[in-house]
Length: 110
Image 1 (cartoon, rainbow, N blue to C red):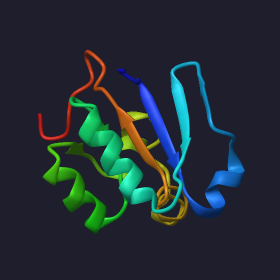
Image 2 (tube, rainbow, N blue to C red; image 1 turned 180 degrees about the vertical axis):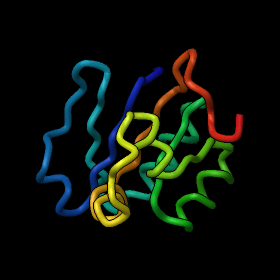
Image 3 (cartoon, one colour; image 1 turned 90 degrees about the horizontal axis):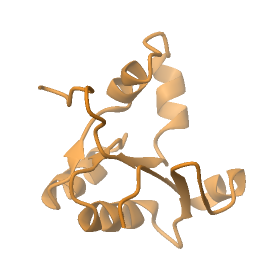
Image 4 (cartoon, rainbow, N blue to C red; image 1 turned 135 degrees about the vertical axis):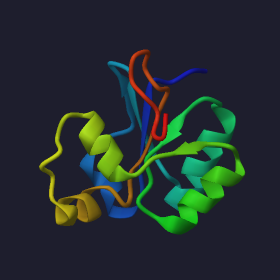
């Protein structure tokens, strides 16, 4: 099953949104460790880009051949280059966002 975007919520973050699949965005609640859920989804969906803010998770994702980009890359890709480093570290560490790269959007390092 190809998913345009998957957002994984863990811990108290699960209270922020119900599990759903609407408008091309699927929200998944991690049953325990969010990193395990993100790695599992990435391993099952080749050709995804994952946006972690954690070095251990990045290492695990690369081990399953997922492409990894930084939260800053995502914010710039979304057109928000003025986002502060503090807001990135607070908002993104417990989110795993997987997204196939859209045509016309350059992958990092491309």
